[in-house]
Length: 278
Image (cartoon, rainbow, N blue to C red; front, side):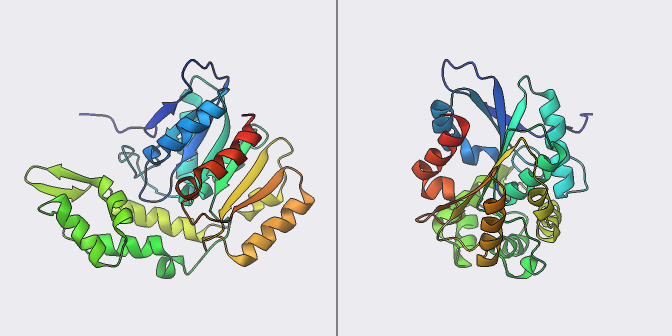
């Protein structure tokens, strides 16, 4: 009988021939996996060879499906603390996109005074109580919950997803979680666990992490100019904090939507390369 995993699955990205002295955890969004950032972090590692990038599958995602409940932001952040203690290099930074951005904030709060870099990609610290009714990720979850547990093919999964008005590109991304089991295909993620994570994500207010300056850590927000994830009020609040705190910066990528690392990888690479010493 196998013992349940206690650490999230992860993959290491280091520039060829480099000998990095520190590492940064990289956290994906809901329904994603660490591999979503593989292409981008390879370019970032080449630009910043002193850093290793650790692509994490957050709990209930990718290959990290056996971590026990509760499935909350706090539990996901605690997973990262345990992972960091097991890594050979000191974790000196964390970067998270969307859901992963809020996990990054929770993790940074646990590592106050110990991190050099915190990067939040198109994610808001705000609680959004109506998020489970209105936000796209919650609608995707409800759609997936309505599907049969078993489907005859991956193509049938794609047909069902696109019939709900989801773009083919997003459907292909979701289909990365479809696996063959015997004669049928199943969506491999535990949707009840995803629902718990998403509900806690919308419930948590993590502005206090930013309102209590760390002193050591540099914090950067990168926002897609064509994304509505970070509201106008939240952008104003971030700008106000940044005006008073020289360790906080806010960057807008005008042509990017929510997937900033896909929509404008060169722009994001310029921002992060300058900050990380590339």
